[in-house]
Length: 601
Image (cartoon, rainbow, N blue to C red; front, side):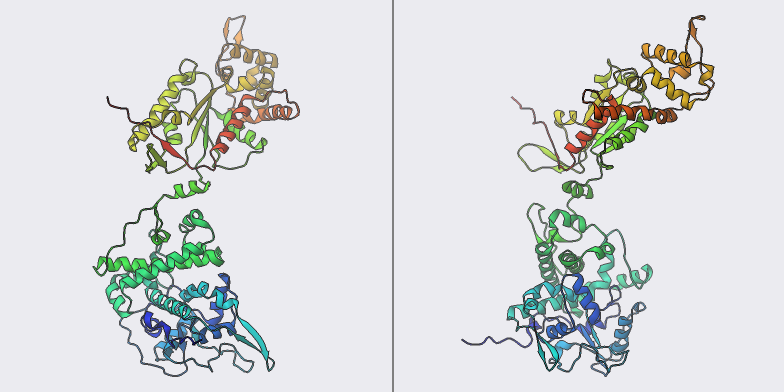
């Protein structure tokens, strides 16, 4: 069996500019500082790789991870001439790099044979200020997943009371991949200062500089000149970016739906990620920098535009940080965590507004705004149509490419559940027309979005109206005696009436099918005068009355728990129905179907 000849420098076929040339560029490492060996090991650990100084030396020996530059204690090459200004250094490592750069003491270790005497670890006799002189680019972490098999076969043995670490010989294909990832790291390091601050198109994230200084650098940046400087043509940038995106897709442990959400988070929030999830974002970050560079070269007619990729056919470009086929609402809906309420419960007045949250809590329903939101309409004469259009009108994203006409939704549909007194627009004779007006408004909103024939049965599900069995909420849920007790708690004079007179007044207005407010707005019936006595000196606070009536409502709920034959108050039934309606649609994604076009004879 013949031995395979492993080329001494397999990275030559992927050769970009020397790492020293890139490290000598004025803005390099200003946004993310170079890493010393200990910092590189720490960053690798965040990504699930347990390295140490001995392994780092072996990775260098095997041409798998070669330090980005070596800061020599003597001159190793020419002193570069800086043609533009650079921001102040923000770290000691960058300061050391620049100091060595300005004295020609930076060395690209790929240009010289393996240095056996190059130490990675400190010795006891070394000065406290000793440093191995090795610096890495953060983008060299991208090669780590390629090295899993090699690292798994790491062997250690004791020789002369010293632990010797050894990695197995690498296959030529692995050496080739390592070389390619080094060239990617060099290219992205060169481009980082220009493109990293704008990965989020809505914000500029800068380090060690200000917006004015960076804007001057951006304006002077010439993509075509940079491509020539680092020997990195547009096509290679695109190929490398797609490689990174493909790796991200296969590596990401959270799946496509969660990944889309993660990519919307700012880079500052990635600090909480670790292992493969963090590595997947590293890949996407580097790829985005390369693709932004590629798109600038397209603008300079140095490359062909990126292809238009259909969202239903997966392509590596779908993994881009900037890829946004759907809205944030759609991404959240797909995961079942949309913040939009599944039901809006609209009630008339202050008493219901106070009691509904209390009942919700009393029934041990979760405090989840995405389930139910409460809305007070403020009266049965208030037109609910516009409120309904805001609360329940579906928002469509586009047509579904199916045989049956249908529309994708931007957010989950919201049901509108109206619970009102049976008067005004909600009187028995008007309630059908009120609902029809609401549905007509929903259809109008959909027509404005291009949906000409929405499914009427589906729209009808979005609106439910309930009216109380008595003339108002208070009369429906409390006896005259219970109401009198509550009013006497919150009104110090009850206009000089006796309790008996207050109960009689409540009974009078209940029999008249009027609202409870008539008690203090119109008074009580006076038999002697054969008329009502008139308005009270000051009115009862409905908010305070709601609080005073709550113990009575709670007692009714408690009785239902202990007595199966006890009927739950109507408002409790409404709250329960609201909860079940919300849960029914909580974790679903939806489309809105369209009525078929009428056939033409």
